[in-house]
Length: 130
Image (cartoon, rainbow, N blue to C red):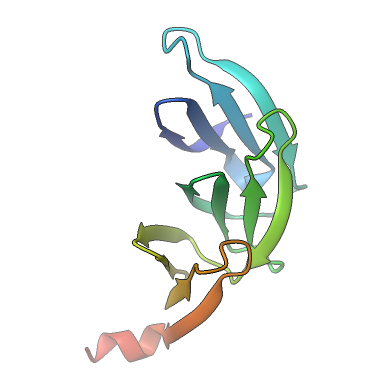
């Protein structure tokens, strides 16, 4: 698949495919030769955005009608979708809050990381006057 977004940390490389059909996880213990260890497919039609990793959880931004995805990394060889939250294209994590944008600006509280609580939703036109 063609890669849309990539993120790496000390252990893994996280990739999303163009068209949002899958999420791929690579082991990068040998950075010169990363090895795919797992992937999860979603079907077509998903507009993907950024991926944020927080401990053993991946927040996968998507504008698909069924929302963005929460993927567990508890077992890196068997990725699992463990939740969903509102649509987003771009995501940022600061302390215990997740910030996202997809036509509107959204803020989620992550006290319960698999059930993000939407704290604020500001529609796009409301942003123009600020």
